[in-house]
Length: 434
Image 1 (spheres, rainbow, N blue to C red):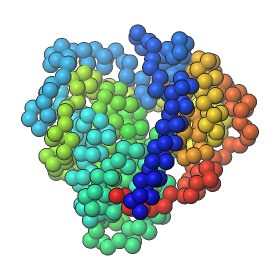
Image 2: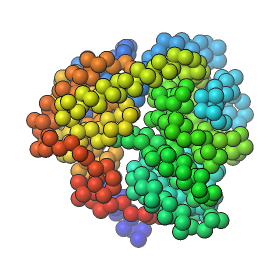
Image 3: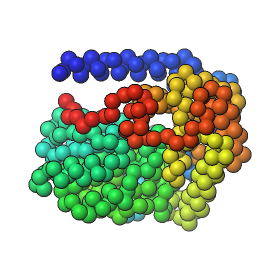
Image 4: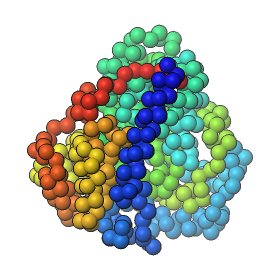
């Protein structure tokens, strides 16, 4: 079995490498910007000034002068970096940022150098070695990485079909009540923009005392919910067995990650025992300064107005895409959109044409999406105008109609069965890692 798994992994890596190199050679991924200074939604790619529809700075805060000035002030006061593990010493900004984030989410927050390191810090501490860990098959790669550590500690890992709460409930019913069951998933999925069934998840937490839930809200934090508390906590209460991972590098506009806990006891246990926080470096000084400034914006009345404007633009994208016959994968109210192309070569060509037209979008192929489900992912932010959106979508619809055989097809099944049927792959089955 070990040899078979190794061969399979080698084949996947070889395919991954070929596809990535194809994108690099085409000049559409691993793109180094040519700008001396970034302003608004524009970037320079291949000598062309284009509008960037590939950024996750949904509220546009990454270029906000208040965050830039706060980062500069922090460097002036504390230096470029405070080179010490936070287990020994940390800057005053650390406590200030954690306290502010805690006020945003209504919980106890630990900041981490990245969301990925947050997963690797929290989950091995909290998940018992004999636990059953259920993970959505479309969960982010960083969560899958964390399950490899959990598996090496003795936990059983099962991949479940996308957003299949019936499968979660069956797994719980088949497990002893004395055994902890963990469910790991994204709240807003980074490729297709769909939202986890958070109401159903909350119901399962209420009815199964051995269930713990860990949700990655990297793409839902800051722009959604009161004061930017995130998509998860906008749809469900902060349950006593709910852990929420956050990104400070996307909509929040600063850098780093964070983990939100329902109470101080759980959070401080992770702070004391988590390996990456103990043995790794801290958030960098400018990230801390910008983070504190971002918190102030989120806790002010300004945030509600920013969030409302973004939601209005989400509605505008949805309406415009529909009027042009563009089949976006999901209709959830998020600023992430995916238009299926299917063929990698066509996806590459459309991306190149879009750059020539003045728009950068994200080509998405295996392994980010299943084989046969390649497409164009784009995001939008408060830096984009309605005119930007309309012009970009018009060109995307034109190029898709020119290259894709089924331009009128508007219903795309993003369940595992649907993706497997499209890609001629077997559906993902539950499996133990190791």
